[in-house]
Length: 254
Image 1 (tube, rainbow, N blue to C red):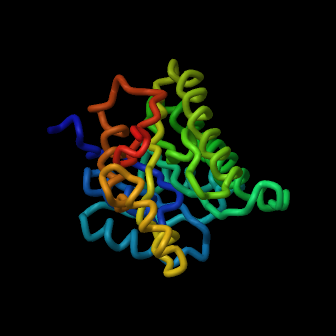
Image 2 (tube, one colour; image 1 turned 90 degrees about the horizontal axis):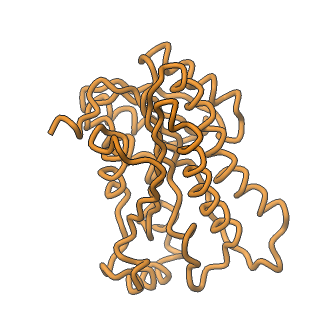
């Protein structure tokens, strides 16, 4: 159906070198968009992402920077528009996770997660939004987590949970602030997902618990976030803004 197509769109994806960001970038390209890929300069996977997009017959542009640096984001958005065309879609997937008991957590550990996961999403939206406001239209999807709504049993990650809750409410607030400017902003909150971080040997036993506690009895694959992202960016979701879409295998039902 044409309303689900992203043909003719120009998209910008942060965190596009691995995991959920990479998977979404590929699905956006498969839906017809040209895609600018933003990640750290030492990203090992971003060239792989670009090669797969080009194999789909779409254009891929590699840009580098840190989501905590507005200047690098604005430069990347500017390069995107110069080389691919007016920005009309964006997905902000860059983020990190780690754990420590709250009473022992150094302020520096708290701050780094907040800076990347929350401030980084705001700065990404700001750079993307400024371009979209100039064009009078656009759609943004921010990647949060079900941890922005629930507290994960057995995980000591108050900083991560707080950052993801912030992403949800930041997105709703921006959606309302920019609703008159032709921009839609929504959120995808994944459940436990088989990203590289969760595929490490040292978390093998923890994965069994994640699978047991998820009603669908397994973890998501990163590409299962691609369909929801394409939908929220497409004309099929033209009346949807300010929504937090849980893609969690039913986890929050229990």
